[in-house]
Image (cartoon, rainbow, N blue to C red; front, side, top):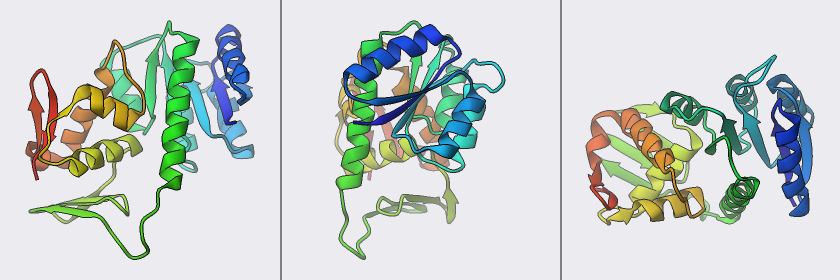
Length: 228
């Protein structure tokens, strides 16, 4: 059972998602705007947030930014708009997924459960004390144990999902990996339909690593290969 915070100014949307979540045995808290969500997160610990973007009093992006300053709780953003700018804004804040309305509540729960499984697997995985898995290529250094990436001596900050994507590619270096496998392994579910989530993350990752973006090769019609 997980503790889920559903934040949306439309009570009908909250009710539908809540019904599915309760059916699957989760505990649900509701918020009607971003400020209520921020206050709820200050008073309680949640396993995942489902957050609308456009809301009165405080929008979802502002709320996530405030919550992210004190918590790394996974976040699924909901939006009536599918523009790339909105997706980029959300992913730069470190949200785990972005869903455009209208959506299926069953689909939302599939994504929720996939993120929760990945979070549980991450907690269960351990590294021997004192060991660090590090990839080095010229001035590019990725410490996959400490979650640190430096470019020419300067540490760069990445959103959590960008770390996951980069480290997945590095662990499979010199191997062609399909888009479907990346979505399955990094996002934790079979992704059907709109796969712009991966495209947006790749753009953000390449921008973040600067000249070392050349290490990430696009295989047209197939996927990607990290050359190490």
